[in-house]
Length: 437
Image (cartoon, rainbow, N blue to C red; front, side, top):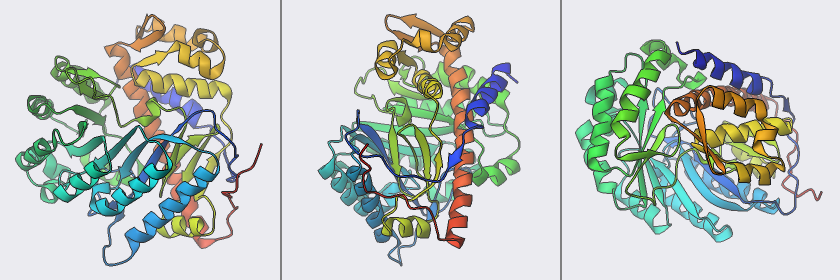
């Protein structure tokens, strides 16, 4: 195994493993220094994919489940608006948001009425309907991210998606019909399933390249409590295979036609407007997640929302933010390290921007880390920016994979906290009334 894998795991565990959790407090009010990012979680799915690590709930159209959920989303958003938050962009994840496109489109209109959103991205599965596409176009969705995972029928069967979404040829045809209907159409692929055949991955990627897909995102398999039984059945995760697939398959296949905009996201070189990506945490320092199981980072704290629909809706109806976990304030240096990690995962750190945010030059604030990155040959400087090279890209892929794996533990804690609060409803109140500092 690559020794840097152990370094990445150790580094992430050192920081996130010691994060202290406190009883949720109150939002501070007043005008905020910058615009935040808004993540909107829509958890509904027709069926739950076995490798999924996110908060998903089976869709029930026979009840008022969807209407009740979007009503709660509106109330939660209004709480943040009352506390002085302003949002500059939004990402809708799930779940399968396109399943409830009418309700989602109405909600996005509600958001746009209150905030000047520069861009909106929405996740979809390969069966996204024409009606959903028209709904999203009508409300100005800029980027549609389609969870293809593979065009190979054998891989689709292994992932439990062949019956749900059709053959690779059918999926390819549907994706091609989406091209040109949004500013960006992104296709997600998963890699490093146990015994993942490099030739299958290469064919998948080459198919997308040949079709001129605007953007490709290649996610390594990550373990979480939600997908552990699936991973255990498939076999252990082989990180040597992950490195081989990334360095010998993904990068060579995409290098000629695509530019890496993060360690695992690649945009067409001939389309400069393809400038959005899934990892909004790269471009936005603070972000707010609304909806069940959503995570937020603002005011120096990490927080996680209630995981179950009944608890989420009950807390919102009581005038509480539905937060069930909230961290102690992050140390200033930890905030700096987080910023550096996310910026280099996104391939570049702007040294002037770092100094503007933190009031100290990057190389002075994080001298040991900057020195180590240069000594290991992972980065290079150009003007006021520091960039990762291809070796550094893989190292930061490992770091982000470990980061998200650890974040999945926060989700597990939030799930446990949610079940406890359902049994013992006397929860600390998190008021939406602004506290004027």
